[in-house]
Image (cartoon, rainbow, N blue to C red; front, side):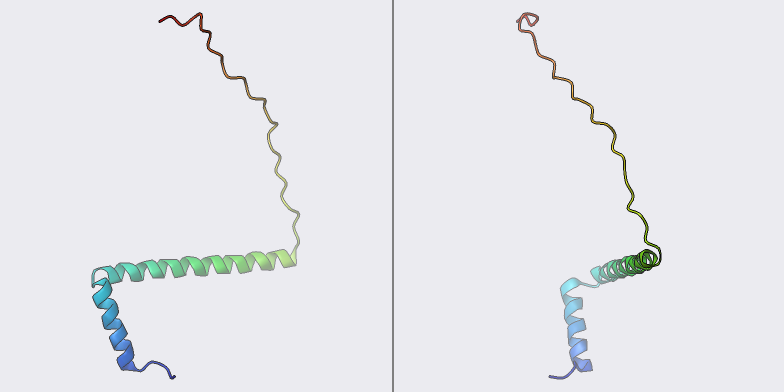
Length: 84
């Protein structure tokens, strides 16, 4: 099985156009472009982070949690104070 010929690509393009319509295709292309741009920036950020970690090992950040406060008991209703 070889690669697709130009006529195959043309048929695929026409099917996509018929299935999705001319109005949705530009929006779909924009969405794919944004997704690829975000993916690319995240990948480059991950690579720069990993190169920084290998050059200079940093200590793990420690976060101090606020002291736990005991919860106050829920107010009990007094049946004598409620009058019907």
